[in-house]
Image (cartoon, rainbow, N blue to C red; front, side):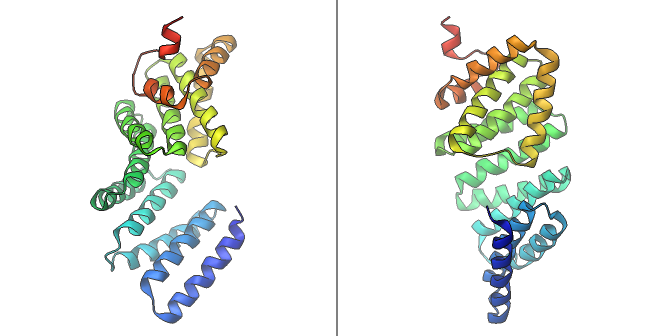
Amino acid sequence: GDYHAAAALDEQSAELARALNEPLALAEALMAHGNAVSSLGEYEQAERLYAESAELFRSTDVHWEFATLLMNMGDLALVRGDLEDAETHAGESLAHCRRVGDDAGIAANLGNLAFVALERNDADRALELFSEALRRSHELGFGEWIAIMLAGLAAVAVSHDEPARAARLLGAAGRLREELGVSLDAVEERVHARTSSRLRERLDEETLASAFAEGRDLSTDDAVAFGLSPEQKPARLQRK
């Protein structure tokens, strides 16, 4: 988590790669540097580093790392609210991930595209993308993205006027994040805050707390099954 130290080391790496005339190593160093400064909120510098890295990657046949760069560029575009660039980068990254069989990258890019759809108020498209990303993440045991997709589906549920379902999904996502020790990034925080605010408008405090607790009680497998079964209560709740 020491992004200042990371950025300094990445910069040294880039200098060495330039001196050695190693374009692939330079592309990797620039991407890593962009990741570090993006984490520090220095988005304009991150965009410049990513753009230079992308130009170098396009001259190579390294699809996997280029796909990762494009995914990071999509993440940054989402943070900055540039939905067109976010969609373009995620779509290109998804194509590369499919080409090389990077299942984790496929899941992550589907999630980014789902967030784009959500920001465009296209809840049906977001539901389709979040659901596919959740299925793939669960198959991979990709815990952090399971939590992110459950939270995304909670936002969709609010849009579909299913506040109790949304609260359960948020509860499940929150429990999983706590177990993994991961925090929300800027986009997730924005969506979470909006979803929580809309839930407080639609549910009284007791109902909201109860539904949230019910979601937290679900195992990860049950939470995924619930997330993939629209307009149904978890099996544990149906038996009551």
